[in-house]
Length: 279
Image (cartoon, rainbow, N blue to C red; front, side, top):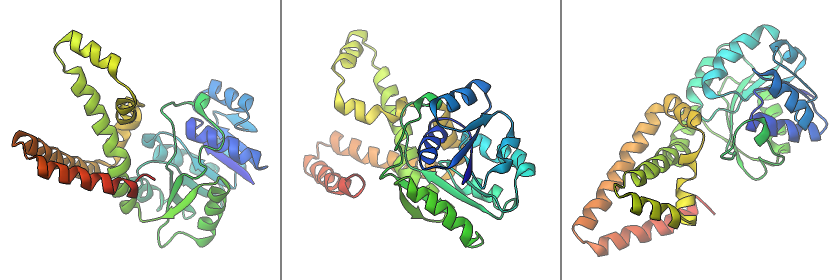
């Protein structure tokens, strides 16, 4: 197939690697000419341009731009598309995107690959990024079955695990396991930096090991992505943050009261629950 990728960063570049290796003809579009040249040189695309008209030949288009650009870029793309072209996106928030694009394009289906790294840009693209990773699709009742089937087949060929849900369900779920952790992790780093004794802070930095590395990783990631999560999934994220603060208050009270028995019970409960989220 002729597959278009609008946005040649980590996700777009990685999609290009895998789909091109399967024999698809990949057409890439980026805002920067230098990125287009790198995409072709690396093998992420057969052809790449800053001109949206390149995607006129695409049968399927993946919009892989930052969240804030998905809708504006799509509206600019519309004049170049055939009515039969299937369009999907990879944004980490779905309700606002689906609500905006679905009335404009019948063959649109929202998508979100739950894969990535702390790095960004075309240089961070890698092969097999999506293997065994969740890939969420958020079709509406009005989404054509043919469009759903086409996107499913492409996603399945990436080795990803497909999940279907409503856009609003997606946003609530990812607020817990993706967007909240970014804010919590950022707060952890900020809290550590509030240490007033420079010697103690320096010692803490030297002693930090795997536990701190794991819990601080997403808070030390791309700030632009964190802002987009908060902006486009605001209500669900606020709900999660308020509940998280409530749980922190409970733990604080137990420690202040030296209620070790109840604290142990809570820690045992979370120990038992973790495998349900992370195998």
